[in-house]
Image 1 (spheres, rainbow, N blue to C red):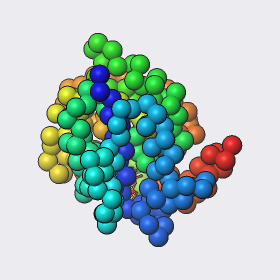
Image 2: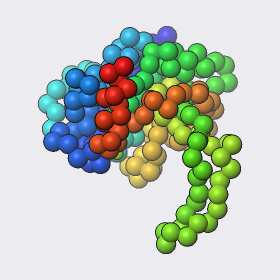
Image 3: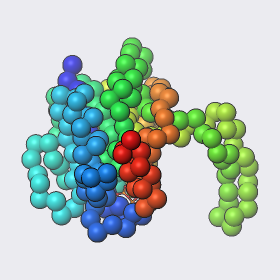
Amino acid sequence: MALVGIVPAGGSGERLGADRPKAFVVCAGRPLIEWSLDVLESVCDRVVVAMPDGCDDEGPDRVRGGESRSASVRNAVAAADEADVFVVHDAARPLVTRELVERCLAAIEPGIDGAIAAVPMTDTVKEVAADGRVLRTLDRSTLWAVQTPQVFRADILRRALERDAAALAAATDDAWLVDDAGGVITVIESFPENLKVTRESDLRIAEALLAH
Ligand code: CTP
Ligand code: MG
């Protein structure tokens, strides 16, 4: 069974506002992406990275990013015809562990197409109108905040990514598209430290956690 890691790193990191694409911002002494690559490379047969614009580092395991995160994933998936299972993990989540990836992989059994890391919501979540008026409060007991890693059977992920640019841009994670394609997805309880570096404050928290 060929296990291929996919690392979407094609974003510019607008909200972080650094002098370079987010994946290459230094975090606890090394480029952010290196933390994720170490873990994926220790589990997968091969890892394909979707690179940001302007990176000339191309090769079989380095592909161009796309206009959206899902388009980047699609480009990377297209470079791995041999895959039976994909492990997708954002360059922006440096605190992933091998143990978490392995728990997601172990959940792929007959009848299950995907397994995604997530944590139960701790904040109360409300639906709010454009003018700021609260519309309703969601039932927190059924809500999970979804992260990566996200692990999928390769055939269903390939099929799920056969969408137009608008549908790819709307999907903020891969499980969204796999669910749309009829895939059965299960949640694997993760830990809140597996945060996504989005803003400057996240970078500082990640550095403090990685230093431990
Ligand atoms: N990503 C990607 N291709 C894109 C956009 C995002 O591969 N066109 C990747 C990012 O590099 C990141 C992950 O998807 O590893 C999660 O995206 P996000 O945190 O939103 O990163 P950016 O899009 O870079 O940040 P921002 O939205 O603030 O610009
Ligand atoms: Mg983004």
